[in-house]
Image 1 (cartoon, rainbow, N blue to C red):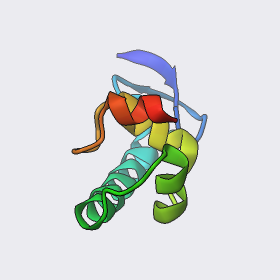
Image 2 (image 1 turned 30 degrees about the vertical axis):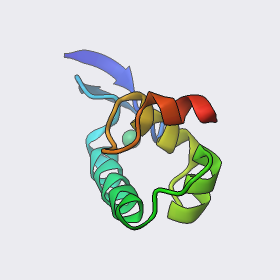
Image 3 (image 1 turned 135 degrees about the vertical axis):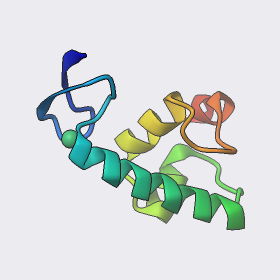
Image 4 (image 1 turned 45 degrees about the vertical axis):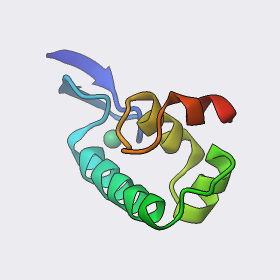
Amino acid sequence: MEFKKCARCGCFFMSNNDVCCNCETRDRLDIAKLNNILNENTDFNSIQDLSIASGVTFNNLNRFIRNNKIDGLNNDFYNLK
Ligand SMILES: [Zn+2]
């Protein structure tokens, strides 16, 4: 276990994850929301578009994509910016 800074809220915590336990829940909700949106519409031209449509912040969205957390979104999409 390492002492880390949460990628989402910036607090310090002990874990092997990127985010603290509070933010794990928030991450899960965001990812569920993104997957729902992408089930209905995959016609997004950029991460910015998807961020606006989902309400998930650009930073969090980038982090999810980088960590392959979202089905159907891969690094090709990430490279579009
Ligand atoms: Zn946190």
